[in-house]
Image 1 (cartoon, one colour):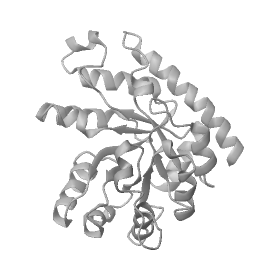
Image 2 (cartoon, rainbow, N blue to C red):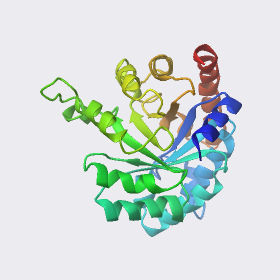
Image 3 (cartoon, rainbow, N blue to C red):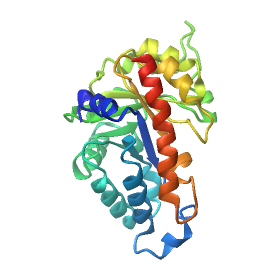
Amino acid sequence: MTRSELFSQIQQKSSFLCVGLDPDLEKIPAHLLSEPDPIFAFCKQIIEETADYAVAYKPNIAFFEALGARGWETLAKVAEIIPKDIFTIADAKRGDIGNTSKLYAKAFFESMNFDSITVAPYMGKDSVTPFLEFENKWVILLALTSNVGSLDFQLIEDKTGKPLYQSVLEKSQEWGSPENLMYVVGATRGELIGEVRKSAPEHFFLVPGVGAQGGSLAEVAKYGMNSTCGLLVNSSRGIIYASGEKDFAKAARKEAEKLQVEMKELLERYL
């Protein structure tokens, strides 16, 4: 998917919502456990009920690969049923030496036809650029994340006072462009989103941490939105586990709609 196609979806739906698919057998409604493929049944209903409001879906690969070969089969089925005009993110956080990265890219971009993949930058250029060689595919590079452990490394300053995440932002823009490179920027970092935006004014940000993790959608938009929105705000648990009963998919739809209504207001305010 191209940048213009993604922005067109945002405009059409008045939404920049990404729904995270983190299907856990211990959390999905009990009545689904009798299905031949409970995880697929769960994801299918979530997708069907939220597709009106979502411009992206982000399957968390760990929740599928933990189930072994069957989990990979389920992931492929889930990827197949996501509407073709909705952006897809393989949240796999890959990042290894060149030949290995190229095969990871083939797995997710060719075999399963995801639009994008999350990538860890720690090993540098040759671990990232193989993903950038695929036309109309995206790297979503970890920059400033919302987990507690992010403080261990990402905010460490060099002798000039520059934090490590800023070095990642600056260096990686030599490898890719706003047409194929996004950044993960956590919603719980508040004003720091604005600092990231200064360093990457045109790039899209994938923003986790809104909802269950406590991030503010209004703050994200205030500090992070640019002229083409530039944001994909992810909500996982707050949507997919809105109910643990048979009405789970309808409950998910209601939560997605609530976010979309707020997003529409923010788009009208800032664009």
